[in-house]
Length: 420
Ligand code: ATP
Ligand code: MG
Image 1 (cartoon, helix red, strand yellow):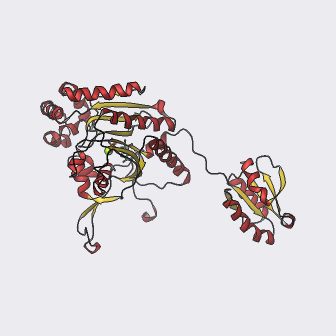
Image 2 (image 1 turned 45 degrees about the vertical axis):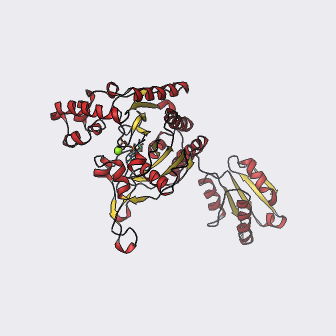
């Protein structure tokens, strides 16, 4: 029955997979906090305008990938308006920054984690519902801001344990003046190579030639390989800014590869653009991407406010983890006989309140209960029979070596903590 399958491009996260996700998110949150980025969360849907206005109507996300629907008239305020499941979180965080009137209290540092939605072709490392973590820094216009967010991203990757498989690629998109000059140069170049471009890119040519640099179409990629680089069109100020970012990274010993064709898929970036990439995930090799977006807050109707940040794909980072994070280890409480069964219930509860993870084996005979203890990988079984009940004790059996010891029930938390 089709309805009993997950929707194409979506996935269940069963406990083992969820532990990998959690390791990524928790590690990232903990590291981000050391840089002052605090966890926040925005709604999963926003008015469509929030994304349309910011992402630009020539991006793939806006033209093809958004899940939008109409708010029903009966829903009152906002009824009849178009609503979209968030395809990314920067626009929402800026919206929240403005709605909550935080623009006079700068700088602000945010960390977020949660699901995003894009209608794209599902493949390994590319889902329609996927998860991102990210940081956003508002109000730091200096290159130190770019260095800080990159250093934080690098630190998270190091902490996750696979930094040796990740490369940092770096580019600058300059300021508006540099960008206008580059735009003209690009249009000239792509005009001259028009026949080699995909239909999509030909359409983008006049409106947003920078976007073509980001195209995944193989024909486009060939044309792009020969395209002029940004460097020649940078203003002195933009060039100095980039030099300061590189010097900051050098001073932290963070290695990077300059990639003159790296552009972020979104329209609001300027100056620094970067991606952390890997060759271990096939075509979906970008695990983290970000840059500076000094024009974004203004685009959304706020005061001119510097911004810089990144977003990373949790699924892709989780795939890079070398080891499965272990499940929490349980102890199995195995009552033997009716009286013991009655006494096991409050004992299990007492142990849990004392911090012990307990599964109460309540079905089947004793043999079956012991088998179950093995299957869940319990480190010990607590046997509770009539004799133990009479003396207020319990028998603790270590499952690895079969050794047994009788202890007072009050001493169980202490003993179990030692056995674990
Ligand atoms: P790509 O080039 O892979 O499509 P993107 O430029 O669209 O990536 P961003 O919008 O920068 O990606 O999102 C940041 C990160 O989120 C990506 O580097 C990637 O790790 C992850 N990501 C983006 N889209 C998906 C998706 N559909 N499924 C899983 N992860 C994704
Ligand atoms: Mg994409």
